[in-house]
Every structure is written in structure tokens, then in C-alpha cells.
Image (tube, rainbow, N blue to C red; front, side):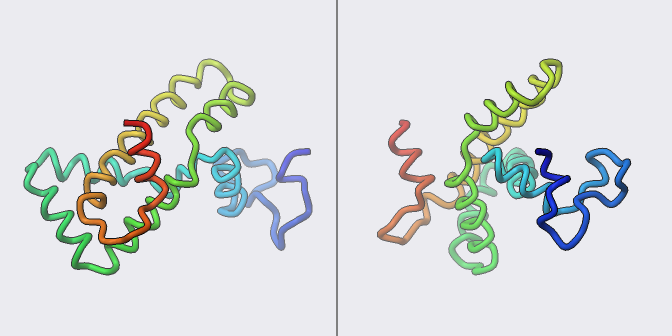
Length: 147
């Protein structure tokens, strides 16, 4: 059964019943990305922002690391995005692509999964060197196991 036809929310899943994906409300949109273990609305844009600032001047990496250490809001934001990466699994997202997405859109999924990996790598450059905890985030554990 299609999620939008299930009567589990206080509002319809779409703003316009005849509308397409652009008329989805936030809850089904986030639910879909969570179900696929890709969490795209959370991390998309972080990698591009980090990449842009580092391409301007590689010394900005040190500035981002200092911000992570000294600015609680920045640190919590980065830690929350790390948590999303710890819960994410681009392999599951790829399986959903193969089952539910037309083959002409598969390259878009490949590009998004590459962006996911690049964003995770850039995020870890900011936070890993400055971690001061005895219990590393699962993303760090995964990174150390895969290297």
C-alpha cells in the first residue's frame, strides 16, 4: 500500500491530492528518506559548503576544527550530522533505486551516493582530529575498520 493512502497522520500526505512529489508535506518526505537509510534532507549541502570553504583556502580546515572545539552550536550540529551518517546506509538506498526507480535515473542516485561519501569524508576531517571522548561516534569506528 502506498504510504500516502495510509491514514496515520493528522493531515493528508500531500498539499494537493493531484500534485506530484513537489506537493508532499514534510513528514512523508522525511519518512521516505529515513526508510531508504539515506537521510538526504539532513546532510545534502554540508559537503558542498565544506568543499567550497576548503577550496578557497586549505587553512580553513583548521578554522573549522577550531569552530568545532570552541562553538557549542557548531559542534552539536556537526555531531548530529555525524549521527545521521552513523545511521545511514547508501547500499540500502542503492537497493531501493534498483527496485523502485527507473533506470534512466540511476546515475542521479550514483551521484548522490558519491556526494554522501564525500560529505562524510569532509565532515570527519573537521571533527575526528578534535574528538575528546572515550567513546567515538560509530562513523569513526566504521571509518577505522574500512581503512
